[in-house]
Length: 175
Image 1 (tube, rainbow, N blue to C red):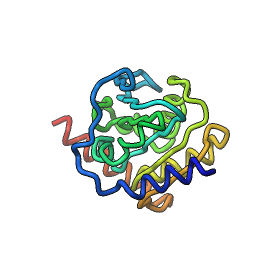
Image 2: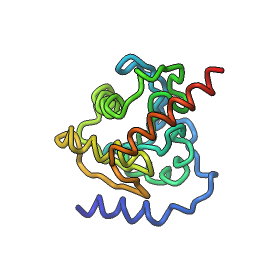
Image 3: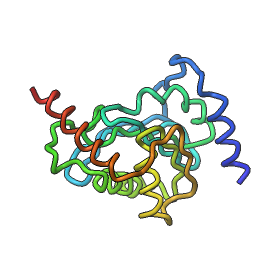
Image 4: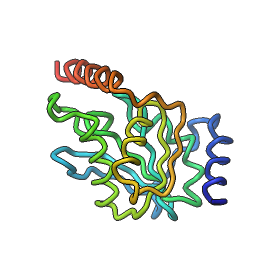
């Protein structure tokens, strides 16, 4: 659609913005933690309009690094940023049984439902692309559009490496 193309073009043109574009709290800004699938997930919404969900890279990252680049879209879209389980400001005290690609995909759907977002546009960066691709297969009726940026392959070998990296990250955080 032309609205989606406009979003893609805007995303492409703002990738080099500075960090000074961060949101100020207003009636368009909301953040908190919500209990989802047995863990606390931190999220923030900025703007109004159609829901545009950002899936960050990692594992171990938070949404913060990409916020300045997407923030200008808040004038036309309801931007939804969240830290995936075990990362950022979401609960990080998880054991390996509380972290899997499957749980991360279910967290996206549970957050979409909890926030009553309807069909969502998803923008995924790097490792978030794996989640986005798998989410789109499992929940096609929840998805309006999908944008991948520098995504990695959705191979099973990468899943194993991801779980290993998360386990090592979690061990460092808990020592």
